[in-house]
Length: 117
Image (cartoon, rainbow, N blue to C red; front, side, top):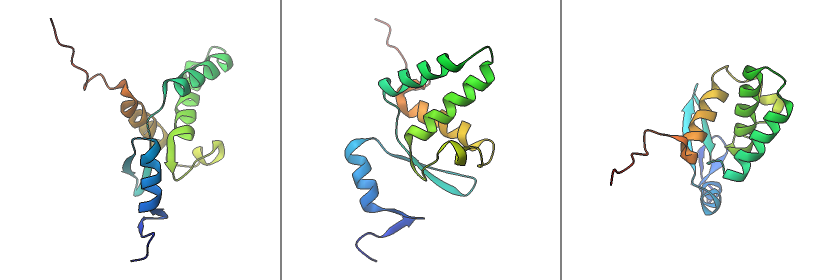
């Protein structure tokens, strides 16, 4: 094995270690493809929300898709996706990745159980 051994596709141990210096890193396999992603920061979430609100006319479905796509474009570490490539993956991939990113970003209510005092 070489110094930068391939784990999956073109992702190396070194890449993962560099990502881990900056973020919590997650991997999920969807439709036989490994995706590496990180959580969304509060500032990024606010920017996505503002951007979506500014372009929303009256169509919540389009706004929802736009938020999902922006979230994935920002937080997907590998493979990188831009606005064109996002439109060419299987229909549920972006939605699933967006939900997983939101969960990793603290939006999962199932993990947060308040303690009654």
